[in-house]
Image (cartoon, rainbow, N blue to C red; front, side, top):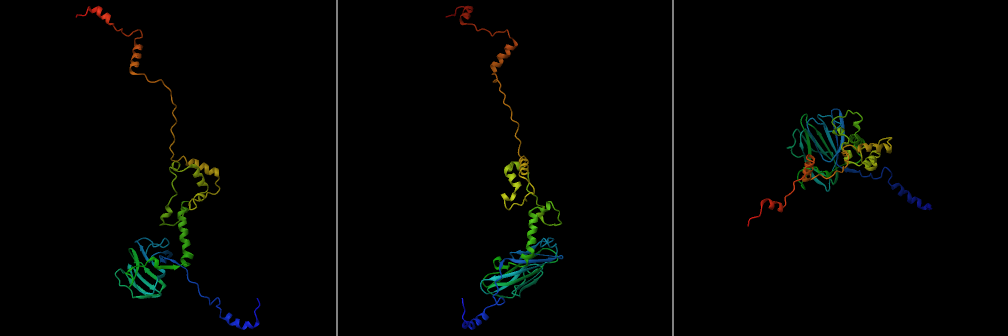
Length: 317
């Protein structure tokens, strides 16, 4: 396509007015529901995702698996969103000390038992996302508890709803902390600590044992067990049992044959049926015993009527 030389002076202003890479409109930040909360205490730190602007830690327990028990500091960061611009007030219930910042402005601050503390000053929330930061410090002793509330002319005082809370999708939690938490969960669910010693304490999942093989023969089929032992995830993709390296099909079949005998009651030996003569009746038993004791004895004869009449004479009329 040829461009006339006369049109070049008209194209220069358009090229100069076109936005460059630095003048392009920034893309909107991608967010997900929930807030990011970070913990610090005892010389350690941790962070995680959370749905609510609330926390309860019983006395003597850690706020996070990576932070030791004792006094700690927690910071929630994210956004609170409203559909239309409105005036809101913020408050909190709990103990320790708490401060709430909305769009960089103080919204609430209290110490000690602040459940009965008055609400903060009214703040104008703009339509859409408003940056939210909550800083909480636990008491020196006892349970640690905090819950943040808000209210406006449109609704009564209520806890910050999860639907109004959001955070950056690619924040520090996703980049650095989440893989550590996911890895810790996998180490527990895969029962790695059953073969490898760890110094991790306070994690009940590490004490979980593999499923019991008791009564396996009564519950499971031998062919199915052989296929499971050889390749568990071919049967169930989410199986936690790993594939045994170097295991052959015959090895799996032998193992299944043994497991099939566990808990399976053995059949009693089959009794051979013996054919005997039917038992004799009581009369035949008596006759047999009499013949045995007196083999020459004959049963008494019964006298006839004529014999009796001859001995007793004529019958009187």
